[in-house]
Image (cartoon, helix red, strand yellow):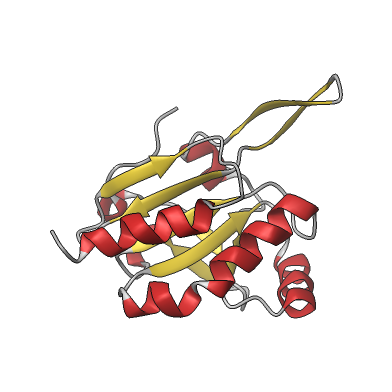
Length: 156
């Protein structure tokens, strides 16, 4: 499944840290929307810390960053506090957004097959148009690559 290419027409909602709905079409733009499998696992922690370390630079570029997983708002709150994360996280507990973005699917680990969230990142420009997508993300260096792409948005 292909992700929505225009946030303006994306009638999808996540749950924000305060428990209130976050409609994708109402989120600030430009926007980095990164999907990750699970709070407080090694790769997901590293990714959230990497985006948090660059939060000031994303802000200076005028780009919002939002992390999304199927974990609950309460679990996100513990994860954020434990690791002093500087990027907001949103919950997709019902899976509607992860499915709409095509990041929910079959995965394999140690010979076991299961359903889960694919690590993926989507960059939307100031008009809400999909500017770039990264699928099957490897964490080392990823946040820096996304920042570099985000910084080019202001040059276009």
